[in-house]
Image 1 (cartoon, rainbow, N blue to C red):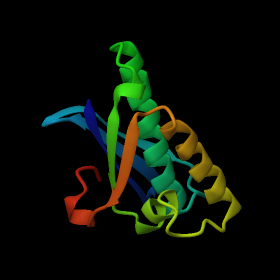
Image 2: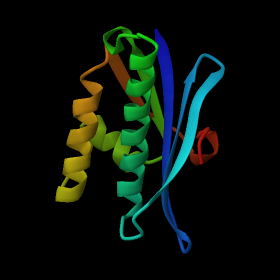
Image 3: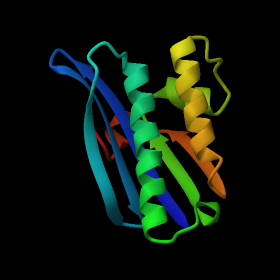
Image 4: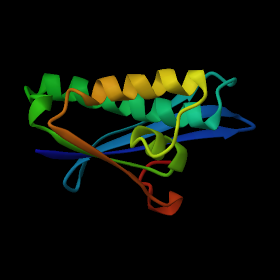
Length: 127
């Protein structure tokens, strides 16, 4: 069973937020934006978008009796830093980002498989 997760994080003069979108084939299951603490950086916001998206999918799969061990998750984000840190292509030097990366990796252990891809901002379905 395949699902897609798109994530994003933003910091503007108005504040910091993260978003995620979860879909199955052409059907959007969830889309949400969360307001975050204004002291967070853009990479932290990006990580939170990914974390909240995975957590929401796990809640959904539990409610629908879908075993996450049967799920292939494709993840898309426009943060090259986050994607390459998760894929192990970039070192994760900042302690706060290492904690967030570890949280993501722990959540992803529950899936049959996952792949995370960098996409250009204009192709990200969530903003």
